[in-house]
Image (cartoon, one colour):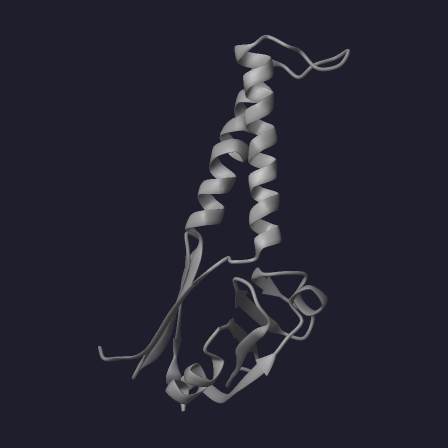
Length: 159
C-alpha cells in the first residue's frame, strides 16, 4: 500500500487549550481543598466521591484526551484513511469519490465547532482546528469535509 499523502493534526487553538487547563485546575483545586485539606464549600457540599469522580474525569481525563487527540489523514492509491484518535477510524474507497475541492469553512457557524460533526446539508466534518479543508463528494450524494493545513496538497493527492 503506497502512501501518496499523509497529514497529522492536533488541536492547536490556544483558547481551547487554556479552557481545558482552567477546568483541570479547578478540579485539582477542589480535590486538594475538599479531600486533602478537608475544606468544604457552601451549605450543601458535594460528597467526596463526587469530587473524586469529577477530578478523574475533568482533572486527569479531559487534559489527557485534549493533548492526545489527533486527526491523521492518509491517502493511498486505493483509499482515504481517517484516524481521529482515540475516537474512530474511517476508510473511504477512492472509487466512491466523484468530486474533490479545497475550501474555506466556518467551523462554528457551519458545524457547531471542531471535531467530528455533521451539519444539516448532509456533510460530515472531521476537523481539529482552523478553517481550511477539503470537501469530498461521494457517489451516494453525501459530503465529507476533512480539515487540513495542507488542503491544496490533499486535493492534488486525491486527483
